[in-house]
Length: 146
Image (tube, rainbow, N blue to C red):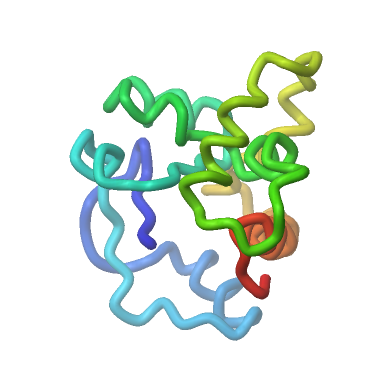
């Protein structure tokens, strides 16, 4: 598992506000290095999750073959609903991709977690809480403990 940004400036260190919020939640940013999303990273990933649709779309533009394995986290959980618990990730991902277009589209706000970069610590705390809960749902869908 890894992380890369669509507009990341490669290099060491973490934004000080982000680091404080991470520490409050029990995380440790030691060794964190930001990196730019590349075609190779997207191509090598079994599942690509972008917090916003724009992030997901940017990943697919970098590597069009990722179309069927790139989602926002909320979109992935929504589309993969009904997959048996404990199913291996590739079938779960294929199941989610197969459900695209079968249901009415949802508003962006229902599928996205807005990028909090530069928005201040309160917004970072809100996004961290929402992403933690969403990560547990993604893990559950993938057969993890959450």
